Amino acid sequence: MPFRNLARIIALLALSFFYGSFFIHGQNKDEKLAEQRKLEGNVISVKTVTEKIRNAGSLATFHFIRKNYSAGDSLIQLMIEWATSSGKKQDMFAAYRSGGSSYANSSNSEKAVTWYLQALNYAIKERMSNEEIVMLSILGRFYSSQRDFDKANEYYNRVDLNKDGIEDSTRYNYFYRKAHMYFMQGNRLEVFKNQFAAKKYAIASNNPKYIAEVSQVLGGNFAEIKEFEKAITYYQAAKKEFEKIGLVAGVLNDDNLIADAYREMKNFSMAEKLFEDVIKRAELTSNFNYKYSAVLGIWRIYYDQNELIKAAAAGKKYKLEDYFTQIGDTASSFNIKATYQFIANNQDSADFYYRKSIDYAYQYSPKIILASKIYDYADFLDECKRYPEALQQMKLSLAIYDSIADIRNLPLIYQNLDSVYTALSDYKNAWQARGNYYMYRDSLDNLSRKDEILKEEIAAEEESMKKAEEAEIKATERKHDIQYRVIILGGILLLTVLLIIGFFHPPQWLVRGLTFVSFIFIFEFIILILDARLHHLFHGAPLPILGIKVLIACLLVPLHHITEKRVTRFLQSKKLHRLKTVFKDEPVEPHVPGNAG
Image (cartoon, rainbow, N blue to C red; front, side):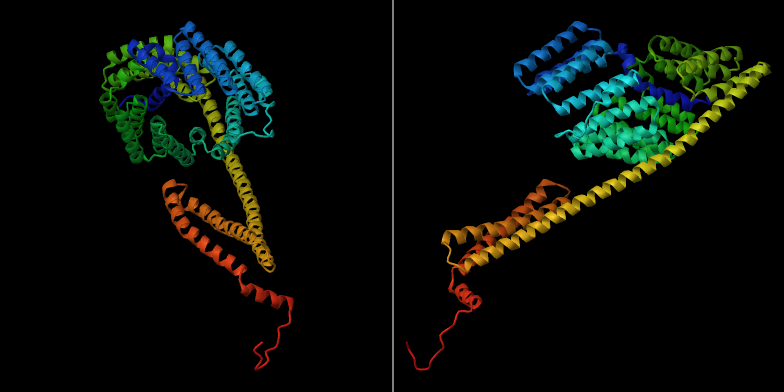
C-alpha cells in the first residue's frame, strides 16, 4: 500500500489549524457580517465602561485585520472619548491598552508601541503600580515576539514585584509573559520555571481563566518533551477551570489535547473514544474547529494502526475537505482530495489535486505549510516512480525547510533523496544524501538526549518548588498556631478578669457587659474553628456550609444566652460572696448553742 508518510501529512494538516489568520480571505460575506454583528452586540450589551472599551478593542481588531482602517481608528478614538467621559483612571488605562492590543493583533507594530507606551506612562503618572507592571510585561513580550531580546529585557528588568500592593494576578501576568521570551530564545528550562511561577500566582489569585491558561500551556510543553502523563494531568486541570467558567470551546480543546496525548501513548481505544465524544459535543454546540481537529485525530489513530482505508473513510464521512474550504485553507482542501485519490490509486486525479494544493499554498500559506505540500507531492511522485520530478520537488521542499531552520523533517527528506538518487543511478549524490541523513538524524538524537536532561532538570525544579511550598505552608501553620494560642490565652485571661472583678461589688451593667463580651469571644472562637473545618470538608460549596452554620447558630445562640445569664447571676449572688470570704480568710462567728441573737 502506498502513502508511507500519511502520518506526517496529517500532522501538518493539523498544524494548519494554528495558522487560521492566514486563511481569513476564505471567510464568506455572510460569515464576516455575522461575526461583526456579534462583536457589535458585545459592545452594546455590557454595562461598565471598562468592558465596553475592551469589547470595542476586539471590534477594532476585526476591522483592522480586514483592512477597514478608518472604522478601526474611529473605534479607538471612541474608546478614548468614553474613558474621558467616565473620568475613571481604570477606564483611561483600559482605552490605551486596548488600543495598543488592537494595533498589535493587526501587525501594526509602530502604532501598537505608541499606544502601549501611552498606557505605561499613564499608569506611572497615576501611580497605578499593578497596571505599570502589566504594561512592562506586555511590552517585554511584544519585543520578544520581534526577537529584540535586549529591548524585551529592558522592560522586564524594570519590573519591581516587591512594591506594596502588587496583586497575585499581576505577578501571574509578569511570569506568564516572560516565559514567552525564553520560549523564543529556546531556553526551555527557564520557560518551565516561569510557567511554574505563573501557575503558583494564578492559583493564589483564584482566577480560573489564568489557571486554565497556564495549565494548558504547561501541558503542551510537557507533551513536547514526551511527558504525556504529566501533559494529561495539566490538560485535565485546565479543563476543570474552563468548566467552572462555562467556556465550552476551552473544554473541547482540552479534550482534544488529552485524546492526542493518549494517542501518542498508543492508548488508541481511549483516544478514539475521547475524539468521538468531542465530535458529538462540538456538533451540538456548533464548535466546528474542534470537531474537525478531533476528526484529524481519529485519522491519525487509524494511520498509526495501518488502517488507511478507515482513515480516508473518516475524512469523507465528516467532509474534511469542505471544512478546509470553508475556513479558506484551499491548499489543505486540495491536499485532502489528493490523499483520497492516492489511497484509491487514481494517480492522475491525485497529481492534479497535489498541483492545485501547491498553487494555493504559494499564495496564502506560511512557509512551513508550503514546504509540506511540496514534499507531499514529491512523495507521491516517488511512489509513482517518477523520479526526476520527485527529485526536483524534494530539492525545492528541502530549500524551504532550510530557509526557516526547521530540521525536524530533514532526515526524512534526505533518506528519500538517497532512494531517488539511487533509482536514478546517481550514486555520488545518493552517498552525500545518506551522509546528510545520518548527520541530521544524529542532531535529532542529540536533541532527544537534551530532552532527557531537561526532564531531569524540570523534575528537580518541581521538587524544589514542592519543598518551598511545603515550607511556606508549615510557616503559615506555625503562624496560625501561635495566633490560636494567643486567642485561647486571651479567652482564659478574660474569664479570669471577669471572676476577679466579681469579688468586688461592680455595677450590674459592668458585670453583664463583661459576661456578654467573654462568651461572645468564646463562641465566636468555636465558630472560627468549625468554619475552617466546614470549608475543607465541603470544598467551599456554599449551600451545605450555610445549612450547617444555621444549625450551629441554633445551638450556640440559646446556649450563649443561658450560660451568660447563669454566670451573671452567679457573679451577683451570695455564693460568690461566701467564696470571697474564704479567699480573704475573714473570721466567721462561732455558733453558740441557745444563742438566738
